[in-house]
Amino acid sequence: AAALTECRILIHSVNVAHVAMVAEVITALLFPFTWQLVYIPVLPIGGGMLEILDAPMSFFVGLPTASLQYVEKRVLEEILVVDLDDVASFTEYDV
Image (cartoon, rainbow, N blue to C red; front, top):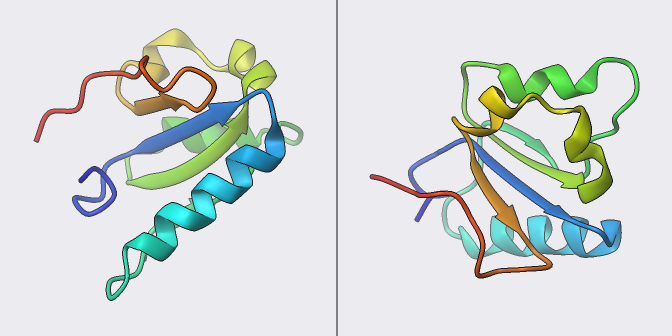
């Protein structure tokens, strides 16, 4: 539902291959719709790329769990964060 309503979505896992695979599967499941906004299956941490998480627009971004330590906590409060290693833990999603 979050993908269909164009929320700000961050998925993360220790295994980067899982992040990329789940990101691709979720975008494929949107068919016949397509994700038209920022889509980065695996966000590189170098070169200031983490600043995209503070952008005021919707996005769908994958990130290795180790990179979360570089993200400010206030930024994560405004994003739907899904931990692929512990699917039972995610931030609240309100429509």
